[in-house]
Length: 530
Image (cartoon, rainbow, N blue to C red):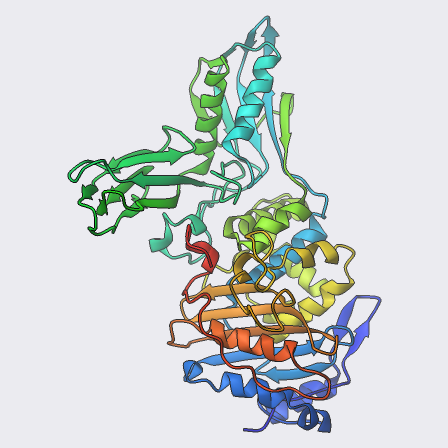
């Protein structure tokens, strides 16, 4: 097999901060195709042959690989295989979403959650409706709602003679992304999207609750089930049984379609591990309103009227208390390190509202598309239908991902964005993220930074790595249509090959064993580590 094209004539347009491909490059690629050789340097370094050797692994038999490697400093193209072939990028879609969010919303952007009133205050009584207005904050915890309620009580309010109105109208009412799998409905990585929601812990998986199941004291006992946060918005239907020590721990925790009833079934042994599952809620706006209403009651504030959802706050309403989220540049860490789908979708709708005052997927995706065009990515050859990559309709090529990786290096917010990428073999969920168990004991460890991506039959890894002689490379790897349980080892081998290469020589790294072998993003398999 002949090696891929190596081209040194790629240029940078400083005015538009975009990489310009010479016509000659396109002609060479079109005529010679993937795997073709061009230029003596490719023969001398051996890098194309080394990467080809990795991709020749039997696990990719019958599959398709789009792979591009470029010098991050000069833009020189070092390797390409099917650079313009569009494949499912899975969570590599988040590279586009996160970069566009930093440009359109800005690193200092914050979400706000406000409590407002339309009535007049008479002593400790607020006469009129109380409004809880959200703008999409995916990091709101039950304790944040509690703090809002405490501040309202501290201001002397003891009764609201009116309704509690939950205003989620910053976003539209479409809750799930295009072509998301129906059987993922209760899985926490496929939660409904609302401008008003609750996250159960500081992984910030908004729109979910944590269901913990512990075995009873004796065989035959009903397991003990708790929900975090503690809310009556979710009901638990326990159909599971405690069995004798050493028995099967085969618990299933799922929410029934269209309801907030979580069914716990199966068996768990005495003294066993039980289960801990993150489960989505049905209608997150109602979830937020329920948590806030409980917090008000806990602080001695009684709301006499019912709760109403999805109504816009009147312009004349007066703000009583407010909560501000962390900065976007800080939010990028849990978003990108843990590949948080809901963050991606909320940011997409937030961008839509920022650009066109429409908090919809359509408006948000148009905003992302506009950003990509502005930095020289051929957005007309990309199909993006959600912000996260959960949809199997998304299509990117490795060439487009590398174009983006090169372009963002010129952005003023690049350092914060770069910091959000998972780091190979770095311990800690908020440092190594989805790469924290990968490429350990290699030159890529604590070196390579990249966004991971996984769906059944689709895997991707795109980012940056420094070579043995100090060059920074940008790489895009998108693998599809394989039948193996995982091709993560091949991605890792390519990056390790790059990390130990020099401008003069490269040799294929052995395909590593171990690490993540999942058909979805490893961060999506809580509570197990990647």
